[in-house]
Image (cartoon, rainbow, N blue to C red; front, top):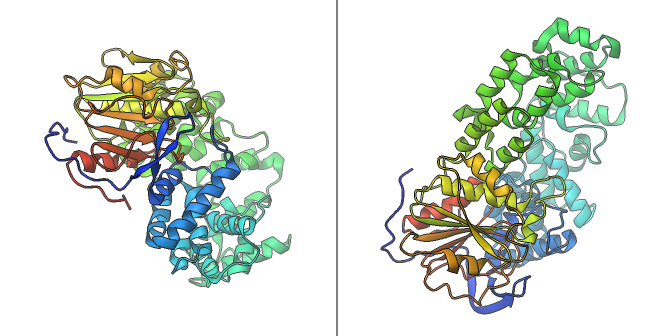
Length: 516
């Protein structure tokens, strides 16, 4: 991507804005700024994990805030929510926020709710998940827009493989429940037979798939009937082809085989596993001792540009795999994978990258992950610096420090170096002091700041000499530490390379509308 170096232009306008003249304290008692309703909803949704506490907000309060925001925005700008919901699901890959926004769009009285509901359903378990959210938040009665939108999603998503993967008996709402509640019209005879099988399977123990109409389900039932002590012999005899015919994923195979996966089992499914599944199982591959040919296949897949692009990996996901990868071969390959995930990040000359390492950033992004926000910030900051000529990196907490990397260090090497520095600058949040101390107009044209944006020193440090600050918000709290939307102060949000599209537009000197 071409580098940007010409800043001799009028500052463009951005859609992520704060309200002029309205201030409020940050969570660290700095002098913050109030975002517009659309801005607050966007920043929160782009960083939202349902049911998860954050450092400054309880899960219940956070959910109440996003619901309230949706209703308030729908009252004045319903099209904004209708467009934001599918953007969250498709571009930012945030399932929970997109489901909440679509459901609350209908609850708030948004028009044409059916296509909005359908637009956020992209996986076979999501029709049931949306119904589950509606039941928990509203009532057992489904509005017609929810019924028809979910039914549209079921028709599009329900097939034999989806049934095998997402219709486990432990789920509170099964595919058959979705069918009974929303009455989807099957698209053809095969799906009609599938719906009948799902209903029978939900209410009877003796449901059997017709191999002429539902061959994958029939093959899966045949495999399930194999005696436990004969299953490894069957796997060796039939090979991976039989597994593919039965729609057997590695997760199902692990439960089917007595004692779980061994090297032979892994080798049988590796060719059909996605890149994300491969990088999450590197330790399992080593512990079970897969053969050289299988290792070669995995290495080729996770370093293939087309495969990585198709998987839509986020840079921080590659870092998570790197942290747990047991061998140098995997680590070197993941370095290539990470480089491949960063192609949409613009290369910026003369940039000061500032990374928040305060105490609030050291909390995990979700209860199901060991990944902290400071790790996400470090990955995104290291990628930005790596892609930029003459970039400097600074970390801050109570104090601040410039970071020096080994010459030629890879992105993963830089992140590893940053991860070892957590705690060395203390745990408070004096980010504006860090910018004021380290920004040098002889060396820098801009600041890119990765943070949860709750500065203790907000409004107390003169930053007028810094012409351009991009704040990448990783938490979505309401108070903003700096104004946003114009005059060289812009806010981005989220954990993916899509975050940088707004930056790319602004750097080109163009006004930036919402990215959806």
